[in-house]
Amino acid sequence: MLKITILTFLLSLTVVSLSQDDLAIAKEQDIPEMRVDRNFKWKYKRQLELLRRTYPMALKAKELIDDYENDLDGIERKRKKKRYSKKAHKILKEEFTFNIKDLYQSEGELLMKLVYRETGMTVNEVIKNYRGGFQTAMYGGIAKMFGQDLDATYSARGDDWITEAVINDIDSGTVKFDKSMRKMDKAAYKESMKDYRANRKKSRKKYKKKQKKN
Image (tube, rainbow, N blue to C red):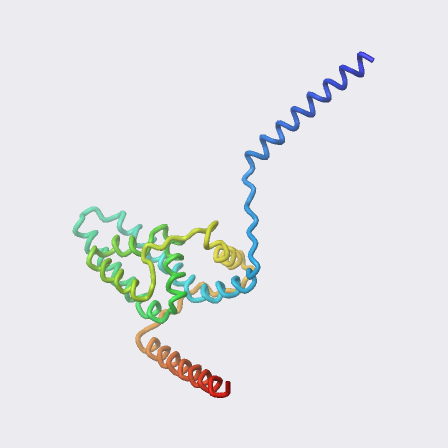
């Protein structure tokens, strides 16, 4: 009887010890939050379409900025650094001007966030680093006209979690995606605008016909 009592007591201590260890492990584990969205499938598709134009641009921006940062590290004189920063700004402008102009508002807003995701800097900070206050103010005014925020950041676990899910699928090869950026020149931009205006006219005509029928 005494043996049974001792055995029961030892077992109870083991159970308590195990339960306390399990609790400690559970506390230490970083359990990912399950995100649920009724319209996930639709939102996923929409973000994928937006990313087809914007993600390659953000990756190109990161590539250029990384190159500039490496070059700047090897320049000691402030005057030379300033001169190089102006040159970098000019190249960035030439690379992206017409591509950015051709974006829809929703694509422009996403691009701002993606630049932060890839470079760790807001668009505002990129402009400041490679140009100056006047240019920043000018671009800020243009951005506000189009409803874009130059200080936009990116939250992979917050508002941008669906975008992050799509990017993870792109990077893993689950989704077919071309990461190369197609540079748009002035002529291509003008042609794109012609197509855009023509499509808008068609849409308006269709809308007016429907209104007359109703």
